[in-house]
Image (cartoon, rainbow, N blue to C red; front, side, top):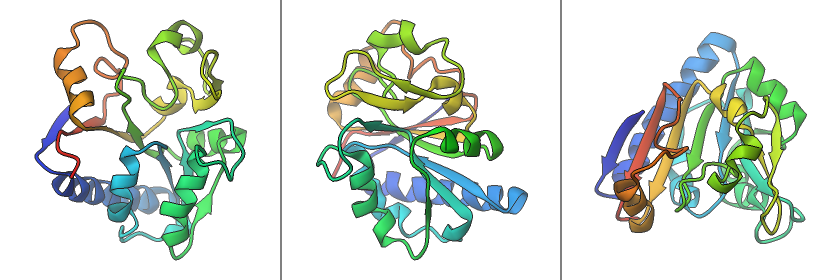
Length: 205
């Protein structure tokens, strides 16, 4: 995992934009198609202005979510609602695929470019450390949380491992404090992803 620390959100945003643009263009050149997986939550909202300006043929890219809350699509907690309002609706053209078996099939066919946002407890997507025993051996597919309210669904760890590259966002003092202080095994820090970037931003302004 490559540790990338930035002094400002602007620096991190331009870095992420440049990297993902290159990654998607490379995938399209190889396969004439690409898959982009994005997270929900507050951190990714800060990066949407950079991602909407990507110079890529959006009609050749399938966009999906890493995880979703089990709420109606018009609910304020819906990741899809946020994705549509803050990202999809601003694109000239797009192909969106809900978090279901069809997305799993796409991921297996086209290794995705994936962005994840780390929680303050180190969780990625909706794979929470306290439920590790539930999801750690799950085959490629969609995992449903056991003890969250509302329930969530998430790409399994093996599904995420299909990614060509993963960018993990750690934005804010609390998340970076967690990264600095943790001393035991963490899904985030000791991930087996060989081609991943940890993007750390202490100052979210």
